Length: 355
Image (cartoon, rainbow, N blue to C red):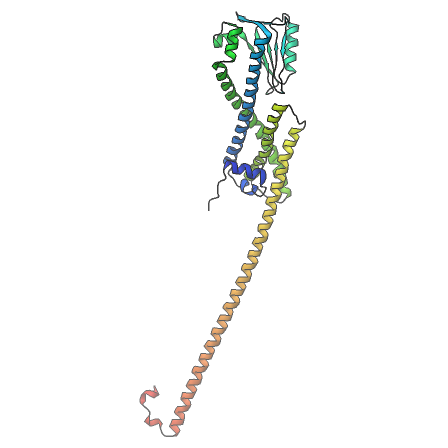
């Protein structure tokens, strides 16, 4: 009989709430397990990418409002940008209201390498940051430890931007082009994060597979590698869900857990150990039931053998009884003939009686 295939959400529920169900999960084809973890990672990547895009959109709206209130003039021409603050300061620094939002530093009047390097170091020290200089823009993202630098010349030639002022910039920030750019950014982030997390998850699965192999051997189970791989993979379901929740909470409130990665691995390890011990317990239970069945079958065979022997004995007794009756009947007939012969009646009997 073909095994019932579990749906994606049924697998999520089983891998999180049902340790007994790990036996059926372990029996899944590796191809189906790979599809499952890929879907989990894809959902994870989409949620985080949406969060980043929403953060970026909130930052853009703050920048738009900041430009309206704090900047008196913006001018871009000949691949150079000039930003003049309303308060007469040389440099502007915009800090986000919530954790994770980028710090934006605007210093288009920086005229020395030392000052520019100081601004760059300031951005590097931030989790997310944007540095706007006279001839280029530098971006630091929490997704990477490196900074990304774009020159205005390259941007201008790619997007055919020659001149821009404050009014036009505000129109760009609030226009359809920005929404389209955010959608493109979101798709790019999903692809990027999917690739990054797949690489990380593969390493986690390899390490957890070694743990599952060691635990199964200690428990006296000889599991196939496909079963070990499946158990290690499904054990990551709850840690990944907690990772998504933690990211959302961290993004909204700035709350951090110092040893979250250790907890992430510990939860998966607990699931692996518990699942294998439950499988071991189930194997012992089935072995006990099998022994009972074997004993019952032996008892039934003995009972059938006894009944068969009893039947044969009765048949043999019946056969002997009939033979005795037949022998007795012959004796009686013989005796009657002899009596008739003695009485002179034998000659009166039909010849057929002598047959």
